[in-house]
Amino acid sequence: MTVQRLPNTCLKKIWVAIITSFILIGCQAYYQGGVVNSENRIILPAGPEKGLMDTRDLVFYYALSREKNRLTVSGTVEFTGGVEDFPVVRYFHLHIYFLDSDGHILERRRIFSAGHLQEARTWSFRRQLDIPGDTSALAFGYSGRVRDVGTDAPVWDFWKVPY
Image (cartoon, rainbow, N blue to C red; front, side):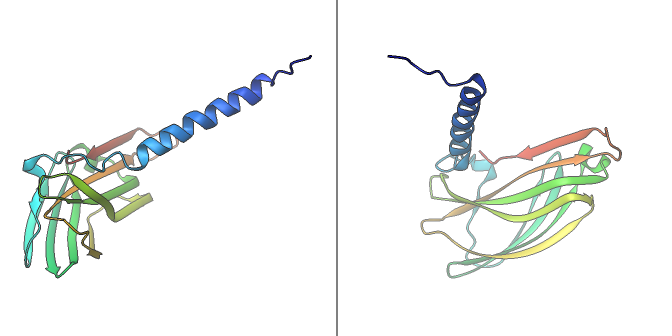
């Protein structure tokens, strides 16, 4: 009986596919069930509320307005710190986290995105969202990449997760 061996390139492709699958599955919902630090929690407002998230990378001025199980989030994002020194935004994503009474993450949603080589500036937005059941608090987080001008220009990755 003869045993045929798969060529090395085929084996490599299979291993790459397996590893990539595990990474994608693992990253899909890595945040769900995580616990948000108490200092990053915002109690779900009964009515209108304004606030500020001030980090080393940006200032996010926000307004929240709740009507039954709908939440309106409006805000302005302004880059600060080292991020503001880079003129081009490769990508920027702002997320809202819905939390239960113990601070466990129920769900994360993207509420604002910018980038694809846009000029860095101040952005304003407004979103209406359905509030998941059992939500009693909120948190915000973000990730982004900025760069300088030119083909070999330096890049700067920045992020904040609330947990």
